[in-house]
Amino acid sequence: MSLEFSATLPDFLILLLQLHLTMITIIQRVTSASVTVNQQIIGQIDSGIMALVAVEKADTEKDAARLLERILNYRIFADADDKMNLSLRDINGGLLLVPQFTLAADTQKGNRPSFTPAASPEYGQQLFEYLQQLARQARPTVQFGQFGADMQVALVNNGPVTFTLRSHTAP
Image (cartoon, rainbow, N blue to C red):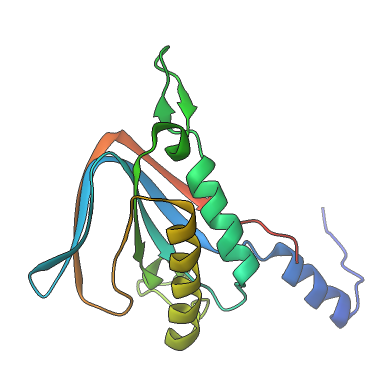
């Protein structure tokens, strides 16, 4: 079976843009989590979500806003029937956002990651700072890792419960 593709180059580029999956995060349901830089704890939460966040080249402020909404509303906490029906907002839990550009790596070939999909450090920091601003407005208990720092992240994963989320905004 062979497939034929007859789109023109501009059509192909539009298709690639539509396939862009946007910002990525790994969220973990935690009983506690902290980030340490230079032997100082700079962010710490009790029960809630610790999220590792990556920014890719084509990500936008719209993607950051959508990703935050998904994190805050994703139902990963148990209700009275022990089913995952409650969100971070529902339980009024803590949120720890940690920048981690390595999540944007292309690992499909070879034995070494390629960081071609990752945003430049300047743009990654700009978009992470925008995400921080939105999170501060949305959550009373939000803490952050430090962009570009050598961080030590400690957590107690509750479950374990871990999910990969993308913002999936329209192009």
